[in-house]
Image (cartoon, rainbow, N blue to C red; front, side, top):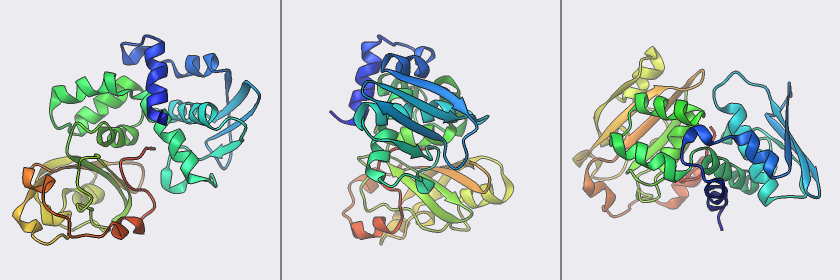
Length: 275
């Protein structure tokens, strides 16, 4: 059973039918994990345990959803990696302080599915078609998580042909794609001056609209296609982007890029978070 399946199995066991019922502290307590809050330095959460009891210390935060995701992340470690101790930077995959990234991705996946379970999120997504950032904001508020976490989760649930990405300045920081999006469509490592995201980065106003696909991809023949771009400010210096592949041919076109191209950056695929 995958980390996500384990998390959603727990949600089902509790009989939860509404996002309001997703009490992350209660989940932790039921699993034998005490949650305490402190002014940690150098990490967002720590986990220590012995046998069937543990303590997750969570850094206090005013950022919406950060504490909840941190708790969910440590629950993932507790459920899957019991016997180990962790110091985690659980709000940013590219800056994670843990030494074992595979375990951190497991914990991220567990947290994302626990806080934004597919059975509860998917109907909301389908009700609006292709979510813009106003919808992302609404979903994040309902599920009490961050906008960044919600963007990545939209790609994970695989109901839309979407790529989520984050740029710091004009440089690509991370990207998450829906599993069905062909690997050949790999976004540029630097923001194109003609992208809406470039304007958002400079002026701060959220923006969305159709764009030539060549603004986002370097593939041969890309000038034949259009995409729908939604862009908004993330944290300081960041811009978040949702790129919807609206031309069906983009989902079936043969690949002309190497998987090695994707390994040039640290955070790839339809993996987790953090948001």
